[in-house]
Length: 119
Image (cartoon, rainbow, N blue to C red):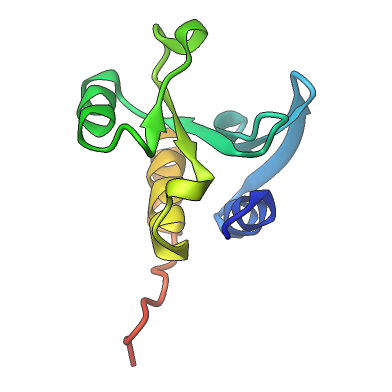
């Protein structure tokens, strides 16, 4: 099963990512902007997500994506670890959040991840 260590490993592999504790939980930041949080129970994580996309994600896969009431006005979405299909999906979600926070100069520095079946 995918866990918080997998999130940490992928996040820290992204350019200029740093881990910082905030609100008694691990957070990950690029160029000082937060793009991942891992709440205490470690059954889910939160990522940046534009509000217009968030509603579509939750409607399409409510078992995977959700927003707690206190975060309803934010541009974040929670992702249930147990609902993720595989590590590729986890990486895609984390990279998407990283891209929303990263400065333009870093977007070209993001290496392409090998996919299963790639030679």
